[in-house]
Length: 298
Ligand code: ADP
Ligand code: ZN
Image (cartoon, rainbow, N blue to C red; front, side):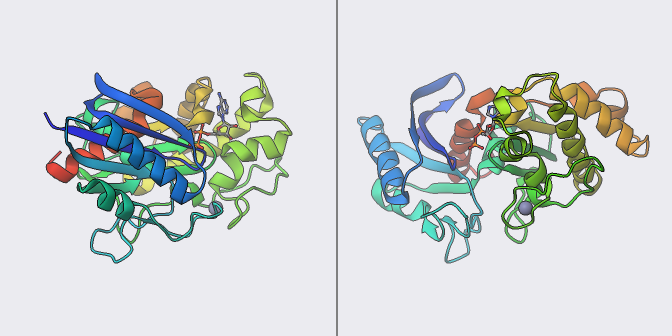
């Protein structure tokens, strides 16, 4: 099987790897996200070094965004309006394609992770499901009828509006909307509301009940609009695995029996799940994106 390269580009760090599948990741590198020029050059250098002797067939990029994932657009492969300093209007796929001379697959970090989970992880055999990350921000992507969700641009599931908890005075941390889902429930909102980093809040802290409350409201909206066959939830905040049973219980309560699916009513432990690929979901998703360049059926 030909060799592929993958880049998981996060706002905080890049992970690059070459390989073909989870059991065959031949080299991986992590580095902090700095300027676009420096970060992209490091990724190119890594692939040039790793592919010596064996040609890369394609590279996939699963990127933080917003991005332009439309191959027909003149700004395809760009990071577009991100608030991350230095990265707005950055051509990301172009320099990689030119330097390495290979096809480049490009999509959001969450569509990439969804593809990886579909190929090798928690979403195998499904044609419509979503992948959410709850980390520095909240992002959602996935497949609909077997194809990555794009549409107008790509989904922005973190920025839906939802009712505030009546006892929560926190104004919200989203620079665009204040109290959207991301503004109320991403890692920085936990830190802003409680005055300490999310990872240092103990499991019995009231923060987590409120967190499950907001995330469950988000999930109910996605269930009612997209009808996903499963919801995969990753990202740093979901390392708090005690959130899963709380979220599942609240989703069932909020739906109140209206969506008559045994997956939700009887088998919710397998409906709302962590990524099976764990922390490798992102970079394996990028490799899956690369493989689609060679074989679009995959
Ligand atoms: P990114 O979103 O940059 O890709 P992460 O998914 O790791 O990276 O998200 C980072 C956010 O998640 C930070 O706000 C951090 O406080 C929070 N976080 C990371 N680890 C944990 C943890 N174990 N428990 C709760 N929150 C965490
Ligand atoms: Zn927002």
